[in-house]
Length: 274
Image (cartoon, rainbow, N blue to C red):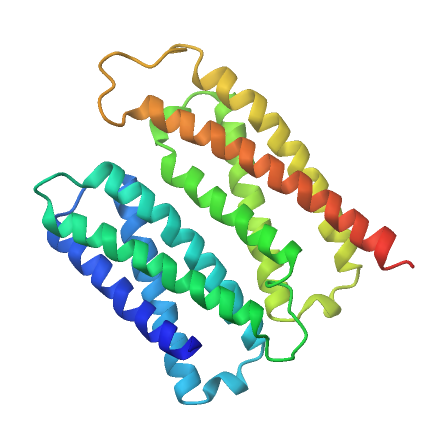
């Protein structure tokens, strides 16, 4: 059943970006994010199917089941967001291809969610890796929310303002270090570090939560200093709306980093020391 769902997901994601491309390109960063999501999911799903069909997956230098389960979780989350964004901004009553892409995208989300349910309900008896545990899921969520922030940012929004530039630096630094942590754990290289990797993660989570606290205060303070209310000529989706999206995504990521810090401290000092 899992293999059938992966083949279906590869076909459906291919249909999504084909229909969206046929419906016409758009200069919006959200359109680019939707196309990237479908292409990204198609490529890695197709790669997973090929590697498992040729049994090459047994020779990879990382936990394969951990990787595929984590990818299914990430793909289901990405498809869910895209299934909301694309029909909201890029469909109309006469846009048949765009409507088709939106409908197929929802089916993609259901397919990936079904794969997650199957892999979590019927595990193969192996020890769960980092990415399929709660800390790993939170790390993927942190990077995913950061990607949504980057998609919503326009260069003119923070150019020339040191406060907003600090916020962008916070988003970028935390994103980079989260990716590094994911790659180190996925490649099982944490044991080669000269210091305790768990302590490094705890310190990083605390610093990231503090940095996001500053961004959560500074971003709305400076970005809405000129226009505190939505301009009347804003249109369907204007730069002011993107500022609101970045504000809410900053709050969400602050919450995730705080929960990650609390859980990592509890895991190391309360559970492992028993």
